Length: 170
Ligand SMILES: [Zn+2]
Image (cartoon, rainbow, N blue to C red; front, side, top):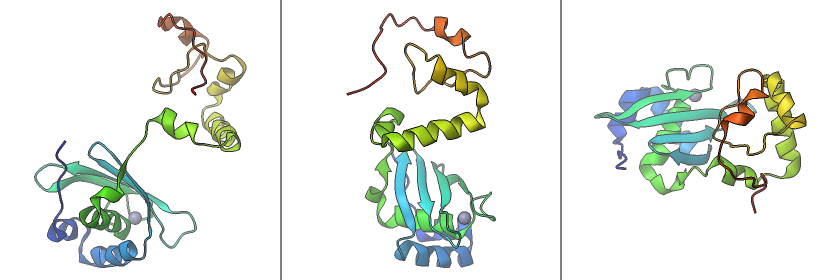
């Protein structure tokens, strides 16, 4: 996949000059955290004024080089903020800093058990139906398979992989 290298002007035209300048400062100060890439999508956190870093997502491509962007900061819905600028500037200057996103299984394998438990509890808080999956687990859970909306009991028979491998990976 050929990913676009961005010109300064392209980034500036996308975010506006003021946001670009602040973004430049942010990039230099190392406020872009965990830069990752998944295909043509850049993902990163950007430490702004708030305690919790904002989440930035940019889709590269097209003639302009930037298809869309989004940031969780108060003005970032259209992705025209300084946090997006900082991420794009980092991409322009150090594309190799954006490591390919690992698969979900690879990523979760690195998490300590306590963090995994917290994650599952938070997911269940958001989707209470998932609770059943803890007490009545599927035989071959797949992280790529979206959770059933309701009636977690019915999904089990749909899988015919024939394998009965335990869910734990080495
Ligand atoms: Zn932002």
